[in-house]
Image 1 (cartoon, rainbow over the protein chains, first blue to last red):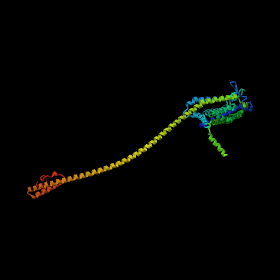
Image 2: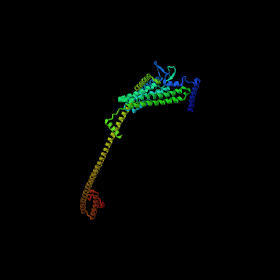
Image 3: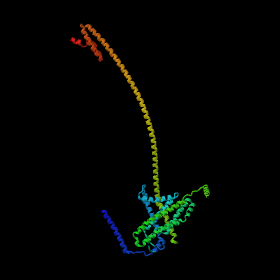
Image 4: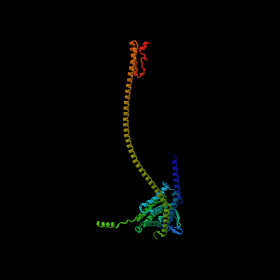
Length: 285
Length: 185
Protein backbone atom coordinates (compact mmCIF):
# COMPACT_ATOMS: atom_id res chain seq x y z
CA UNK A 1 0.00 0.00 0.00
CA UNK A 2 2.76 2.36 0.98
CA UNK A 3 4.71 1.56 -2.16
CA UNK A 4 1.68 2.23 -4.33
CA UNK A 5 1.08 5.60 -2.64
CA UNK A 6 4.71 6.52 -3.16
CA UNK A 7 4.48 5.60 -6.84
CA UNK A 8 1.36 7.71 -7.30
CA UNK A 9 3.00 10.68 -5.62
CA UNK A 10 6.16 10.30 -7.72
CA UNK A 11 4.34 10.14 -11.04
CA UNK A 12 2.13 13.07 -10.03
CA UNK A 13 5.21 15.19 -9.34
CA UNK A 14 6.71 14.27 -12.73
CA UNK A 15 3.44 15.12 -14.50
CA UNK A 16 3.20 18.46 -12.69
CA UNK A 17 6.76 19.36 -13.67
CA UNK A 18 6.06 18.54 -17.33
CA UNK A 19 2.85 20.57 -17.33
CA UNK A 20 4.61 23.49 -15.63
CA UNK A 21 7.41 23.39 -18.21
CA UNK A 22 4.97 23.34 -21.14
CA UNK A 23 2.99 26.26 -19.66
CA UNK A 24 6.23 28.15 -19.10
CA UNK A 25 7.32 27.55 -22.69
CA UNK A 26 3.99 28.74 -24.11
CA UNK A 27 3.88 31.80 -21.89
CA UNK A 28 7.44 32.85 -22.67
CA UNK A 29 7.51 32.45 -26.46
CA UNK A 30 5.77 29.39 -27.70
CA UNK A 31 6.36 30.01 -31.34
CA UNK A 32 9.99 30.95 -30.93
CA UNK A 33 12.12 30.47 -33.98
CA UNK A 34 15.72 31.51 -34.49
CA UNK A 35 16.23 34.82 -36.18
CA UNK A 36 18.77 33.21 -38.50
CA UNK A 37 17.59 31.41 -41.57
CA UNK A 38 17.86 27.62 -41.35
CA UNK A 39 19.93 27.42 -44.52
CA UNK A 40 22.34 30.00 -43.09
CA UNK A 41 22.56 28.07 -39.83
CA UNK A 42 23.34 24.82 -41.60
CA UNK A 43 25.79 26.44 -43.98
CA UNK A 44 27.54 28.06 -41.06
CA UNK A 45 27.64 24.72 -39.24
CA UNK A 46 29.64 23.38 -42.15
CA UNK A 47 31.79 26.34 -43.07
CA UNK A 48 31.99 28.40 -39.85
CA UNK A 49 32.31 31.59 -41.88
CA UNK A 50 30.25 33.76 -39.60
CA UNK A 51 30.22 32.21 -36.12
CA UNK A 52 33.86 32.01 -35.16
CA UNK A 53 35.33 32.27 -31.70
CA UNK A 54 38.19 34.51 -30.74
CA UNK A 55 41.05 32.96 -28.72
CA UNK A 56 44.13 35.01 -27.93
CA UNK A 57 43.30 37.32 -30.81
CA UNK A 58 42.88 34.48 -33.32
CA UNK A 59 39.49 33.81 -34.83
CA UNK A 60 39.03 30.07 -34.87
CA UNK A 61 36.19 27.67 -35.52
CA UNK A 62 34.19 26.58 -32.46
CA UNK A 63 35.36 23.03 -33.22
CA UNK A 64 38.92 23.96 -32.27
CA UNK A 65 37.73 25.25 -28.91
CA UNK A 66 35.87 21.99 -28.44
CA UNK A 67 39.03 20.06 -29.33
CA UNK A 68 41.07 21.79 -26.63
CA UNK A 69 38.29 21.48 -24.08
CA UNK A 70 37.95 17.77 -24.81
CA UNK A 71 41.72 17.34 -24.53
CA UNK A 72 41.72 19.16 -21.20
CA UNK A 73 38.86 17.02 -19.94
CA UNK A 74 40.60 13.81 -21.02
CA UNK A 75 43.96 14.78 -19.55
CA UNK A 76 42.35 15.90 -16.29
CA UNK A 77 40.43 12.64 -16.07
CA UNK A 78 43.57 10.65 -16.81
CA UNK A 79 45.50 12.59 -14.17
CA UNK A 80 42.76 11.97 -11.60
CA UNK A 81 42.78 8.25 -12.38
CA UNK A 82 46.59 8.21 -12.25
CA UNK A 83 46.77 10.03 -8.93
CA UNK A 84 43.81 8.65 -7.03
CA UNK A 85 42.72 5.37 -8.59
CA UNK A 86 45.82 3.70 -10.00
CA UNK A 87 47.71 3.41 -6.69
CA UNK A 88 44.69 1.57 -5.29
CA UNK A 89 44.49 -0.92 -8.14
CA UNK A 90 44.37 -4.52 -6.93
CA UNK A 91 45.04 -7.87 -8.51
CA UNK A 92 41.35 -8.66 -8.25
CA UNK A 93 39.83 -5.54 -9.84
CA UNK A 94 36.80 -3.64 -8.69
CA UNK A 95 34.21 -2.19 -11.08
CA UNK A 96 36.07 1.04 -11.89
CA UNK A 97 39.44 -0.66 -12.23
CA UNK A 98 37.85 -3.25 -14.47
CA UNK A 99 36.39 -0.51 -16.70
CA UNK A 100 39.76 1.27 -17.04
CA UNK A 101 41.62 -1.97 -17.65
CA UNK A 102 39.02 -3.11 -20.17
CA UNK A 103 39.38 0.08 -22.22
CA UNK A 104 43.19 -0.01 -22.20
CA UNK A 105 43.19 -3.77 -22.76
CA UNK A 106 40.77 -3.52 -25.70
CA UNK A 107 42.97 -1.02 -27.58
CA UNK A 108 46.12 -2.94 -26.72
CA UNK A 109 44.58 -6.17 -27.97
CA UNK A 110 43.38 -4.48 -31.15
CA UNK A 111 46.90 -3.20 -31.83
CA UNK A 112 48.45 -6.60 -31.15
CA UNK A 113 45.92 -8.44 -33.30
CA UNK A 114 46.22 -6.19 -36.34
CA UNK A 115 49.92 -5.46 -36.06
CA UNK A 116 51.64 -8.42 -34.43
CA UNK A 117 55.18 -7.30 -35.28
CA UNK A 118 55.15 -3.74 -34.02
CA UNK A 119 52.35 -2.51 -31.80
CA UNK A 120 53.60 -0.66 -28.73
CA UNK A 121 53.24 2.85 -30.15
CA UNK A 122 50.21 1.89 -32.20
CA UNK A 123 48.35 0.80 -29.04
CA UNK A 124 49.05 4.14 -27.36
CA UNK A 125 47.98 6.09 -30.44
CA UNK A 126 44.72 4.27 -31.08
CA UNK A 127 43.92 4.49 -27.37
CA UNK A 128 44.29 8.28 -27.45
CA UNK A 129 42.55 8.64 -30.81
CA UNK A 130 39.68 6.39 -29.73
CA UNK A 131 39.19 8.28 -26.46
CA UNK A 132 39.34 11.59 -28.34
CA UNK A 133 36.80 10.66 -31.02
CA UNK A 134 34.40 9.07 -28.55
CA UNK A 135 34.59 11.83 -25.96
CA UNK A 136 34.58 14.53 -28.61
CA UNK A 137 31.42 13.16 -30.16
CA UNK A 138 29.72 12.78 -26.80
CA UNK A 139 30.84 16.31 -25.95
CA UNK A 140 28.38 17.53 -28.56
CA UNK A 141 25.59 16.48 -26.19
CA UNK A 142 26.78 18.84 -23.47
CA UNK A 143 26.03 21.83 -25.67
CA UNK A 144 28.38 24.19 -23.84
CA UNK A 145 27.75 27.67 -25.22
CA UNK A 146 30.29 30.28 -26.25
CA UNK A 147 29.84 33.71 -27.74
CA UNK A 148 30.89 34.02 -31.35
CA UNK A 149 32.66 36.99 -32.88
CA UNK A 150 29.35 37.89 -34.49
CA UNK A 151 27.79 38.09 -31.04
CA UNK A 152 25.71 34.95 -31.37
CA UNK A 153 25.57 32.17 -28.84
CA UNK A 154 27.14 29.07 -30.30
CA UNK A 155 26.95 25.62 -28.77
CA UNK A 156 30.35 23.92 -28.92
CA UNK A 157 30.15 21.17 -31.53
CA UNK A 158 32.03 17.88 -31.77
CA UNK A 159 35.69 18.72 -32.56
CA UNK A 160 35.68 16.44 -35.58
CA UNK A 161 32.64 18.09 -37.12
CA UNK A 162 35.11 20.85 -37.95
CA UNK A 163 36.76 20.03 -41.27
CA UNK A 164 40.15 21.18 -39.93
CA UNK A 165 39.91 18.83 -36.96
CA UNK A 166 38.93 15.91 -39.17
CA UNK A 167 41.81 16.63 -41.57
CA UNK A 168 44.23 16.84 -38.63
CA UNK A 169 43.05 13.51 -37.30
CA UNK A 170 43.18 11.85 -40.73
CA UNK A 171 46.67 13.14 -41.49
CA UNK A 172 48.01 12.34 -38.03
CA UNK A 173 46.75 8.77 -38.41
CA UNK A 174 48.45 8.61 -41.80
CA UNK A 175 51.72 9.89 -40.32
CA UNK A 176 51.49 7.29 -37.59
CA UNK A 177 51.03 4.59 -40.23
CA UNK A 178 53.97 6.04 -42.16
CA UNK A 179 56.14 6.00 -39.03
CA UNK A 180 55.21 2.34 -38.51
CA UNK A 181 56.23 1.60 -42.10
CA UNK A 182 59.58 3.37 -41.68
CA UNK A 183 60.28 1.71 -38.32
CA UNK A 184 59.36 -1.72 -39.63
CA UNK A 185 60.66 -1.69 -43.20
CA UNK A 186 62.61 1.50 -43.83
CA UNK A 187 62.17 2.89 -47.34
CA UNK A 188 60.12 -0.13 -48.33
CA UNK A 189 57.68 0.85 -45.57
CA UNK A 190 57.53 4.41 -46.93
CA UNK A 191 56.71 3.01 -50.34
CA UNK A 192 54.01 0.80 -48.93
CA UNK A 193 52.46 3.72 -47.05
CA UNK A 194 52.63 6.16 -49.96
CA UNK A 195 50.86 3.55 -52.08
CA UNK A 196 47.76 4.32 -50.01
CA UNK A 197 48.03 8.09 -50.54
CA UNK A 198 44.26 8.46 -50.56
CA UNK A 199 44.06 7.12 -47.03
CA UNK A 200 44.37 10.43 -45.10
CA UNK A 201 41.78 12.08 -47.32
CA UNK A 202 39.35 9.20 -46.99
CA UNK A 203 39.86 9.02 -43.23
CA UNK A 204 39.45 12.76 -42.79
CA UNK A 205 36.33 13.10 -44.87
CA UNK A 206 34.74 9.98 -43.45
CA UNK A 207 35.07 11.41 -39.96
CA UNK A 208 34.01 14.84 -41.08
CA UNK A 209 31.00 13.55 -42.98
CA UNK A 210 29.82 11.29 -40.18
CA UNK A 211 30.08 13.91 -37.49
CA UNK A 212 28.85 16.77 -39.64
CA UNK A 213 25.71 14.84 -40.49
CA UNK A 214 25.03 14.46 -36.78
CA UNK A 215 25.62 18.15 -36.26
CA UNK A 216 23.35 19.16 -39.10
CA UNK A 217 20.53 16.95 -37.90
CA UNK A 218 20.91 18.39 -34.41
CA UNK A 219 20.89 21.93 -35.77
CA UNK A 220 17.80 21.12 -37.77
CA UNK A 221 16.00 19.63 -34.81
CA UNK A 222 16.84 22.43 -32.41
CA UNK A 223 16.03 25.16 -34.94
CA UNK A 224 12.34 24.61 -34.27
CA UNK A 225 11.38 24.65 -30.63
CA UNK A 226 8.46 22.33 -31.24
CA UNK A 227 10.91 19.61 -32.25
CA UNK A 228 12.93 20.10 -29.10
CA UNK A 229 10.87 17.67 -27.02
CA UNK A 230 11.16 13.84 -27.00
CA UNK A 231 12.83 13.77 -30.43
CA UNK A 232 16.28 14.86 -29.16
CA UNK A 233 16.32 11.83 -26.88
CA UNK A 234 16.52 9.66 -29.98
CA UNK A 235 18.29 12.00 -32.38
CA UNK A 236 20.53 13.70 -29.89
CA UNK A 237 21.46 11.00 -27.42
CA UNK A 238 21.05 7.61 -29.03
CA UNK A 239 22.33 8.57 -32.49
CA UNK A 240 25.25 10.49 -31.00
CA UNK A 241 26.23 7.55 -28.82
CA UNK A 242 25.87 5.18 -31.74
CA UNK A 243 27.97 7.11 -34.18
CA UNK A 244 30.52 7.95 -31.46
CA UNK A 245 31.09 4.23 -31.05
CA UNK A 246 31.04 3.52 -34.78
CA UNK A 247 33.45 6.30 -35.74
CA UNK A 248 35.83 5.39 -32.93
CA UNK A 249 35.84 1.78 -34.03
CA UNK A 250 36.26 2.60 -37.73
CA UNK A 251 39.19 4.96 -37.31
CA UNK A 252 41.16 2.84 -34.82
CA UNK A 253 40.48 -0.31 -36.81
CA UNK A 254 41.62 1.25 -40.09
CA UNK A 255 44.70 2.81 -38.52
CA UNK A 256 45.78 -0.43 -36.84
CA UNK A 257 45.08 -2.48 -39.98
CA UNK A 258 47.17 -0.24 -42.24
CA UNK A 259 49.84 0.11 -39.58
CA UNK A 260 50.10 -3.68 -39.32
CA UNK A 261 50.24 -4.02 -43.09
CA UNK A 262 53.07 -1.53 -43.65
CA UNK A 263 55.11 -2.58 -40.60
CA UNK A 264 55.03 -6.27 -41.45
CA UNK A 265 58.64 -7.41 -42.05
CA UNK A 266 59.51 -8.11 -45.67
CA UNK A 267 60.27 -11.77 -46.36
CA UNK A 268 62.95 -12.26 -49.00
CA UNK A 269 62.17 -14.97 -51.53
CA UNK A 270 65.34 -16.83 -52.66
CA UNK A 271 66.27 -16.26 -56.29
CA UNK A 272 66.23 -19.98 -57.19
CA UNK A 273 62.71 -20.32 -55.97
CA UNK A 274 61.77 -17.26 -57.99
CA UNK A 275 63.29 -18.77 -61.10
CA UNK A 276 61.56 -22.09 -60.50
CA UNK A 277 58.29 -20.31 -59.94
CA UNK A 278 58.66 -18.32 -63.16
CA UNK A 279 59.58 -21.49 -65.08
CA UNK A 280 56.58 -23.28 -63.68
CA UNK A 281 54.40 -20.41 -64.77
CA UNK A 282 55.86 -20.49 -68.29
CA UNK A 283 55.34 -24.24 -68.43
CA UNK A 284 51.76 -23.88 -67.36
CA UNK A 285 51.19 -21.34 -70.13
CA UNK B 1 40.29 27.64 -49.26
CA UNK B 2 37.20 25.56 -50.03
CA UNK B 3 35.15 24.33 -47.07
CA UNK B 4 36.88 26.90 -44.90
CA UNK B 5 39.96 24.72 -44.61
CA UNK B 6 42.52 26.66 -42.63
CA UNK B 7 46.10 25.37 -42.36
CA UNK B 8 46.73 27.24 -39.16
CA UNK B 9 43.75 25.61 -37.52
CA UNK B 10 44.80 22.21 -38.85
CA UNK B 11 48.19 22.69 -37.22
CA UNK B 12 46.48 23.79 -33.98
CA UNK B 13 44.37 20.63 -34.09
CA UNK B 14 47.50 18.57 -34.75
CA UNK B 15 49.26 20.19 -31.79
CA UNK B 16 46.23 19.42 -29.65
CA UNK B 17 46.23 15.80 -30.79
CA UNK B 18 49.95 15.36 -30.19
CA UNK B 19 49.59 16.77 -26.68
CA UNK B 20 46.66 14.46 -26.08
CA UNK B 21 48.43 11.35 -27.39
CA UNK B 22 51.61 12.02 -25.40
CA UNK B 23 49.67 13.01 -22.28
CA UNK B 24 47.35 10.04 -22.31
CA UNK B 25 50.24 7.68 -23.04
CA UNK B 26 52.32 8.96 -20.14
CA UNK B 27 49.57 9.55 -17.63
CA UNK B 28 47.22 6.65 -18.21
CA UNK B 29 48.01 4.13 -20.92
CA UNK B 30 51.58 3.27 -19.88
CA UNK B 31 50.95 2.97 -16.09
CA UNK B 32 47.81 0.89 -16.57
CA UNK B 33 49.59 -1.39 -19.05
CA UNK B 34 52.53 -1.65 -16.68
CA UNK B 35 50.20 -2.65 -13.86
CA UNK B 36 48.44 -5.20 -16.07
CA UNK B 37 51.78 -6.60 -17.24
CA UNK B 38 53.03 -6.86 -13.67
CA UNK B 39 49.89 -8.69 -12.62
CA UNK B 40 50.12 -10.98 -15.65
CA UNK B 41 53.76 -11.75 -14.82
CA UNK B 42 52.79 -12.35 -11.22
CA UNK B 43 50.06 -14.78 -12.23
CA UNK B 44 52.38 -16.43 -14.73
CA UNK B 45 55.00 -16.84 -12.04
CA UNK B 46 52.39 -18.28 -9.70
CA UNK B 47 51.20 -20.60 -12.43
CA UNK B 48 54.77 -21.70 -13.12
CA UNK B 49 55.48 -22.33 -9.46
CA UNK B 50 52.18 -24.18 -9.10
CA UNK B 51 52.97 -26.25 -12.16
CA UNK B 52 56.43 -26.97 -10.79
CA UNK B 53 54.96 -27.99 -7.44
CA UNK B 54 52.43 -30.14 -9.25
CA UNK B 55 55.17 -31.81 -11.28
CA UNK B 56 57.19 -32.40 -8.12
CA UNK B 57 54.16 -33.86 -6.41
CA UNK B 58 53.50 -36.14 -9.37
CA UNK B 59 57.12 -37.27 -9.43
CA UNK B 60 57.00 -37.95 -5.70
CA UNK B 61 53.73 -39.79 -6.07
CA UNK B 62 55.24 -41.97 -8.76
CA UNK B 63 58.33 -42.53 -6.63
CA UNK B 64 56.24 -43.45 -3.60
CA UNK B 65 54.01 -45.68 -5.66
CA UNK B 66 57.00 -47.55 -7.03
CA UNK B 67 58.51 -47.71 -3.54
CA UNK B 68 55.24 -48.94 -2.10
CA UNK B 69 54.94 -51.66 -4.70
CA UNK B 70 58.54 -52.71 -3.99
CA UNK B 71 57.84 -52.76 -0.27
CA UNK B 72 54.66 -54.73 -0.83
CA UNK B 73 56.58 -57.24 -2.91
CA UNK B 74 59.23 -57.45 -0.23
CA UNK B 75 56.62 -57.87 2.50
CA UNK B 76 54.89 -60.61 0.53
CA UNK B 77 58.20 -62.36 -0.01
CA UNK B 78 59.11 -62.09 3.67
CA UNK B 79 55.67 -63.30 4.67
CA UNK B 80 56.08 -66.28 2.40
CA UNK B 81 59.55 -67.00 3.86
CA UNK B 82 58.18 -66.61 7.37
CA UNK B 83 55.36 -69.02 6.61
CA UNK B 84 57.82 -71.55 5.26
CA UNK B 85 60.10 -71.08 8.29
CA UNK B 86 57.13 -71.43 10.61
CA UNK B 87 56.01 -74.61 8.93
CA UNK B 88 59.54 -75.99 9.17
CA UNK B 89 59.88 -75.04 12.85
CA UNK B 90 56.47 -76.49 13.60
CA UNK B 91 57.38 -79.78 11.95
CA UNK B 92 60.66 -79.92 13.83
CA UNK B 93 58.98 -79.11 17.13
CA UNK B 94 56.30 -81.71 16.55
CA UNK B 95 58.97 -84.27 15.82
CA UNK B 96 60.89 -83.29 18.94
CA UNK B 97 57.77 -83.44 21.06
CA UNK B 98 56.84 -86.80 19.63
CA UNK B 99 60.34 -88.07 20.32
CA UNK B 100 60.27 -86.73 23.88
CA UNK B 101 56.88 -88.28 24.40
CA UNK B 102 58.20 -91.62 23.19
CA UNK B 103 61.20 -91.35 25.43
CA UNK B 104 59.06 -90.40 28.42
CA UNK B 105 56.69 -93.26 27.72
CA UNK B 106 59.54 -95.70 27.43
CA UNK B 107 61.22 -94.51 30.60
CA UNK B 108 57.87 -94.54 32.44
CA UNK B 109 57.27 -98.06 31.29
CA UNK B 110 60.74 -99.07 32.38
CA UNK B 111 60.26 -97.40 35.75
CA UNK B 112 56.87 -99.05 36.17
CA UNK B 113 58.34 -102.42 35.26
CA UNK B 114 61.17 -101.92 37.71
CA UNK B 115 58.73 -100.89 40.44
CA UNK B 116 56.57 -103.84 39.64
CA UNK B 117 59.51 -106.18 39.82
CA UNK B 118 60.71 -104.62 43.00
CA UNK B 119 57.25 -104.89 44.63
CA UNK B 120 56.84 -108.42 43.51
CA UNK B 121 60.26 -109.37 44.82
CA UNK B 122 59.50 -107.54 48.11
CA UNK B 123 56.22 -109.41 48.48
CA UNK B 124 57.98 -112.80 47.94
CA UNK B 125 60.42 -112.03 50.70
CA UNK B 126 57.55 -111.04 52.97
CA UNK B 127 55.66 -114.21 52.11
CA UNK B 128 58.76 -116.25 52.85
CA UNK B 129 59.25 -114.46 56.11
CA UNK B 130 55.59 -114.88 57.02
CA UNK B 131 55.65 -118.51 56.11
CA UNK B 132 58.80 -118.99 58.23
CA UNK B 133 57.25 -117.19 61.19
CA UNK B 134 54.03 -119.15 60.80
CA UNK B 135 55.86 -122.39 60.67
CA UNK B 136 57.80 -121.42 63.73
CA UNK B 137 54.68 -120.51 65.56
CA UNK B 138 52.96 -123.70 64.47
CA UNK B 139 55.74 -125.56 65.83
CA UNK B 140 55.66 -123.56 69.00
CA UNK B 141 51.91 -123.76 69.53
CA UNK B 142 50.11 -126.88 70.66
CA UNK B 143 47.19 -126.74 68.52
CA UNK B 144 47.57 -127.35 64.90
CA UNK B 145 44.28 -125.71 64.24
CA UNK B 146 45.31 -122.47 65.89
CA UNK B 147 48.49 -122.57 63.99
CA UNK B 148 46.56 -123.03 60.84
CA UNK B 149 44.23 -120.18 61.73
CA UNK B 150 47.17 -117.91 62.47
CA UNK B 151 48.78 -118.87 59.23
CA UNK B 152 45.67 -117.95 57.30
CA UNK B 153 45.38 -114.58 59.07
CA UNK B 154 48.97 -113.85 58.50
CA UNK B 155 48.72 -114.78 54.87
CA UNK B 156 45.60 -112.64 54.44
CA UNK B 157 47.18 -109.65 56.12
CA UNK B 158 50.39 -110.08 54.13
CA UNK B 159 48.51 -110.23 50.88
CA UNK B 160 46.61 -107.01 51.71
CA UNK B 161 49.71 -105.18 52.67
CA UNK B 162 51.45 -106.40 49.57
CA UNK B 163 48.63 -105.08 47.47
CA UNK B 164 48.68 -101.74 49.30
CA UNK B 165 52.44 -101.54 48.93
CA UNK B 166 53.00 -101.29 52.60
CA UNK B 167 55.76 -103.65 53.13
CA UNK B 168 56.47 -102.96 56.79
CA UNK B 169 52.90 -103.27 58.09
CA UNK B 170 53.17 -107.00 58.29
CA UNK B 171 56.53 -108.04 59.61
CA UNK B 172 55.64 -110.73 62.11
CA UNK B 173 52.77 -112.86 63.13
CA UNK B 174 52.91 -111.51 66.68
CA UNK B 175 51.83 -108.07 65.64
CA UNK B 176 48.78 -109.26 63.83
CA UNK B 177 45.42 -109.40 65.37
CA UNK B 178 43.75 -112.22 63.54
CA UNK B 179 41.08 -114.59 64.52
CA UNK B 180 43.55 -116.64 66.70
CA UNK B 181 44.42 -113.57 68.75
CA UNK B 182 40.84 -112.68 69.17
CA UNK B 183 40.14 -116.25 70.25
CA UNK B 184 42.92 -116.10 72.83
CA UNK B 185 41.44 -113.03 74.30
